[in-house]
Image 1 (tube, one colour):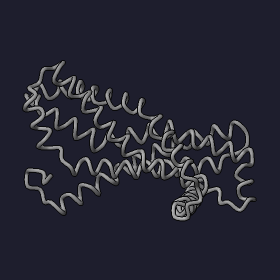
Image 2 (spheres, one colour):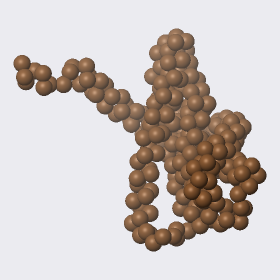
Image 3 (tube, one colour):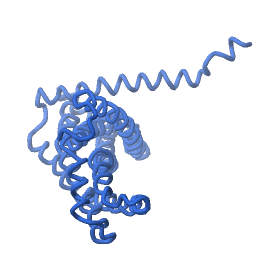
Image 4 (tube, helix red, strand yellow):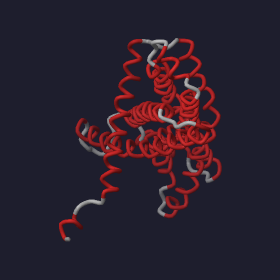
Amino acid sequence: MASDSAQPAPGIVSSIADSLVALGDWTAFSWRAVTGLLTRHFKRRELMHLCLVVGLDSVGVIAITGTFIGMVLAVQAYSQFHQIGLDTSLGAVIHMSVVRELGPVLTAVMLAGRVGSAMAAELGTMRVTEQLDALACLGVDPVRFLVAPRFLAAVLMIPMLTVLADIMGLIGSSFVCLRVYHIDAYHYWEHTRAFVGFWDVFVGLVKSVAFGGVTALIACHRGFHGTAGAEGVGRAATQSFVISFIVILALDFVFGLLANSVHDMIWPPSGSKPF
């Protein structure tokens, strides 16, 4: 009885096994998509159209989100910093948070919700209507033909969207700090210059590239494995966003640890940033 109770439940073992199988299938799927960039199975016109869909159509929502995130951070942080007399340090804290964390993460989340779900639904519909099977019958690899340009469009566009989110977050937070709370502008920007450097911007952009690529691959994978019917297509879109959101947060944690380790290894802590 004691040995039987110590064994893991069959349901847990089955779930872990299914997760590992799904991870392996996604890895093989992603490899086929990435290698499709080398074979150029897709058309350049299709890539340009996808870049417009991913990038230009997302500008409005990214700009609004970035602006209000910066404003909310300023409002929430001001009361705490004001109590200890560190009002002018708000610029460094808020801009560091936006550039390194909130800008890339929120851009990726918005991309997963707006673009990733659309990709999953589109490819899921193509699977239900047997368009993917038709491509395979014509001798065209549907993964390389359909997923590779979507992956490349997301990787190319998300850094630009992240820069936009960073700039709008900076504008929103600066407006609240300087115009609403009347913080001294010189010391506000001086603290920002001293604590936010090129390394922070670089880390944020590297994160965004990884987030964009993984989000596109997850969305396309869910679309390719969608079940028949309208319910199956909707489930694929929902799974795409939920899985992407979890993976984005997990990757952000890993990248944060890695970036801090690399920075301390190259530039040992000395009280100031190298650049």
